[in-house]
Image 1: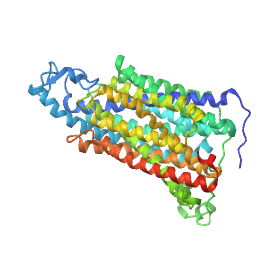
Image 2: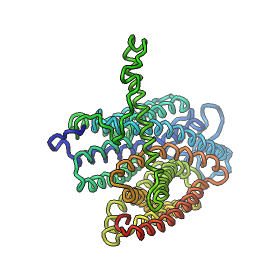
Image 3: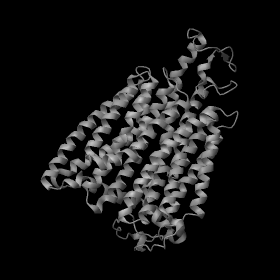
Image 4: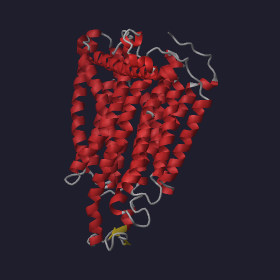
Length: 528
């Protein structure tokens, strides 16, 4: 049955939810970037800094120290970096590769525990948000982030062994964060909340603003990362993130009102399955009469499993069904590009962290934060301010924007893999920020090539694809980096550039197919 909307009021404003989403995205960017750096620091401490006084492996302080093994508990003496022939310095350099590989392995574990539960959670959140309410779908990720901060803070307790004790707290925190859905669930809840409270005319503008604050959240969160590591440290970051997410949790509980009444209507409008023997009572078993609670639990679990299977079946039929003018191949390329782009974007994060902390760069956390700020800041500016002007003045095709974004991303990857200049890497980050055109252009094309009734389903599939890509992208790229670190550390970026070149060729072919489709349908506006 259809839901009954309440009368609008200030506490049900879409703009308030957009602000809350911005705060959440900012703290998540800050927290996750800092935690990845802390995992690297933990790996370093486990190998070369187990019993010394101070945090040698943090903030790139190993540039000011050398190592010696006079005894098992005290192996630190202060020297200058230029004494590269000293055995102590050579000892550290021999450990550097080992640190990189251990950190890469720990980052893989962290990413799996962080993203795998979130993938399952997002599959269930669509229908659950109709039952528990939109604001609870946004509240749970905020509470999860606050809870994760507590687990992360436990890893800072003095006298803990880096491995397995400290790293165990970090991994448990990642698991709790992922179970609560992280930003994927928050984004899904915010999109649903805005959709409930807006008409068709203003919905596009509001959802565009939500995408814009997502980019600015990435930018400001990265900037805060650099500032915190310049003046404070990881402990202060945890306190800040926990405070903001605690505030958001209270706002969602006491301030934000539901956008709609609770309903049991499936969000994808899937048909109900036929009653089975458990649901209609025809096959009641003796043990169910003795313990009906177990029957209810089994029924709920079975319903969720059936629901997931229905969603997967509906998605498969939607993607692979025949379409006129061979548009099925075009849509397959578009969905594949979304999956590929998110997988490489996710994978590059961990690979870049390991790459720039290795020789010859050896960036500290502050420089790494500045790099992310430049990259995401330029991307946010392009998507929020420059792209609307370009579309208003030039009206380029979506495929043109995608090709431009893909070309600039290839240039950034080649610069990253082949250059040893920090300045060039920052310049490449500015140019490579045009990669934001890839995702926005692909989403726009998908929405124009499907029927109006299928737009919601298409974006649901895109959301699930991006969540799955986050899970596998980081693990794949980090594994490649670990395998090639002793041969050529930048190999992972060269491989990435080659794969993007193949995708670029696919989009050039796709541009031709869409042009041919326009000529046959005489509807140029539909897929511009």
